[in-house]
Length: 147
Image (cartoon, rainbow, N blue to C red):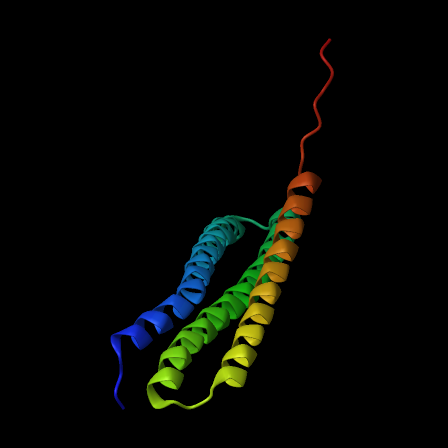
């Protein structure tokens, strides 16, 4: 197990792209958690209002918020899985070079699975955005003509 400085430099060069991808995934996770926090805050307000008095509009909005939170949770799960798989890809790059074990197929497979998880995360996020936009349009106030 004689590791040369040039070998480590080469591994670091190979790991740079997944590290940048990991940065993007972390940014996506921040966006998702912020959206989830806003959904939770709004649902707490509506639940407090429902404690005071019954309202169909509040219940309908809560149903939409619950649906949105489920989609965001699924998206967060897939983004987190993607991040973990990318970390494993980086670790396997180093492990494979240090131990001289051919892990190329495993690295490629994990990277493909990570990309599928990221695609799934984006699909859930997009669906949640569509639902949020549709809910916003359905509650839009109509402008009254000036007299």
